[in-house]
Amino acid sequence: MTASLFESLLALAVLVVVLAALRVLLWHALRGLGLAWAYGPDAVRQGATRLRADYLGNWLSGRFPRAARFLRNRTDPLVFTGLPLTLVACAAFYALFLFAGLVEELIESEEIRTADALLVSWVDPLRTGTLVAIFGWITDLGSMPTLTAAAFVASAFLLAHGPRRYVAPLWLTVIGSQITTFSGKFILARPRPDFILDVTVATPSFPSGHTTGAMAVYSMIAYAVLRDIDSPRARFDVAYGTAVLIALVSFSRVFLGVHHPSDVAAGLLVGLFWLLAGIALAEIRRLRE
Image 1 (cartoon, rainbow, N blue to C red):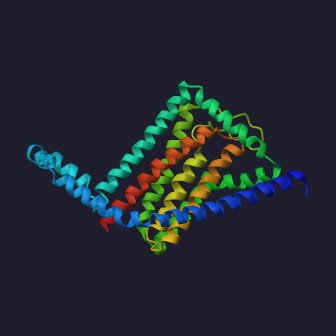
Image 2 (tube, rainbow, N blue to C red):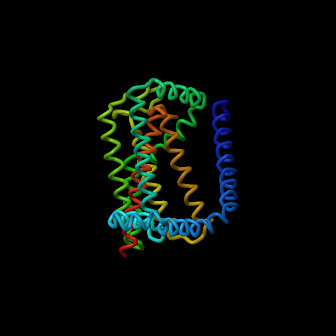
Image 3 (spheres, helix red, strand yellow):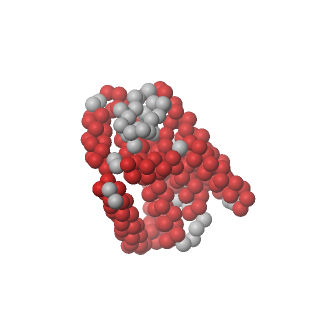
């Protein structure tokens, strides 16, 4: 066994151990928060009820009834179109705000480029032949053909066995994430890093399409699966496995030298935006059934 192969296998073994240990730690941490999960919704409901019943709410209802009605509907914790949808919308716009800030920094500042170079320097010693081959396979899981195939398979399963409400949200994440990604690529036209491996790409660099698609599509499929699962442990395993898959695809883009780390960060934000849009559409469709 050559030294490089041994180092690659050792790195993989360490990664597996770390992921397994992290899974156990996160599961026990979430179990420790069980009390908060049990009483949190009641606390939110009581707080929202008090907020709507206070003097300011009564004054607003008397002076501006339409505005008061709108605020009551948007802060109702009992229906998804109330407080949950408001929080989802705020999270989506915050992700969009962070993405816009990253684009501005990319255009106007050298700090992003410096941070990219520093992160790449940490990754560079890990590039061995075996790991390059492994991450070359992993990165294909975020390619457009693979994501489209996954969406078709998931859609066929949902149409055959249900619930069908997730089909349209899933394709919203697929189409929305890809349109946004390619628009950003050709509008900003950021050059790719200098290719140091045999892996090359022709399109511009920013944002990472593989990362965007993996974040949006795999997360939406996972949401469709875990939304109707009763077992907390099974829901955690689905969420954790999906997060690991997305993290590996994202890291592979930097590891293979085809993206700057900031491209990957932007891809995660864009994917998160479309994931939240898909979740919102799925829950609205759920209410209408």
